[in-house]
Image 1 (tube, rainbow, N blue to C red):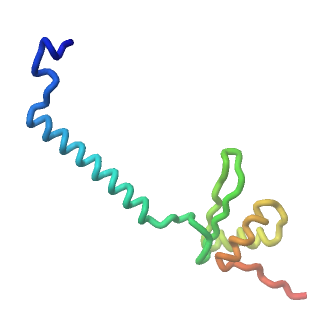
Image 2 (image 1 turned 60 degrees about the vertical axis):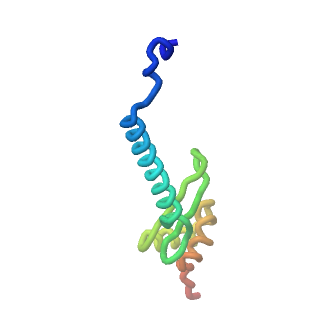
Image 3 (image 1 turned 30 degrees about the vertical axis):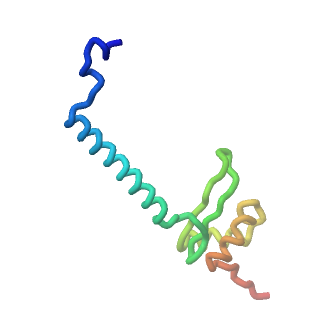
Length: 107
């Protein structure tokens, strides 16, 4: 109803259209950049390998990822091969993938 009493109220000026186009273009560029970054960035916790261990375990919030590299990974894997709990059983195949196999004990 207001537009009928004020005919110019619903129309954008050329300057307003230009500003709207610039802001819309910037939003599209940011979203496209985030999409490209998300697609090309390597996932740090993607899997075990090269001395790093990633294990997904059940948690009260659905799931948790345990990720260790270097000396922490070696310590984690040593414990996993000595223990029989659920986390250790899930960790063993990931330790093997990371190249952290159990050390053979001598009789």
